Length: 42
Image (cartoon, rainbow, N blue to C red):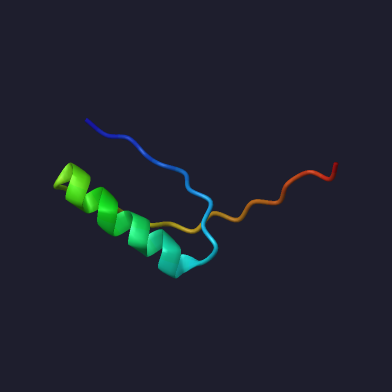
């Protein structure tokens, strides 16, 4: 079984902190990838 999370984080350190929590919850591996997002103007 697999899945993914998309998180909005201030920086990579925050993303890695969430990844550490994910490893503890799933007892598996967590991969962190940076995704660039450009929101549309309002």
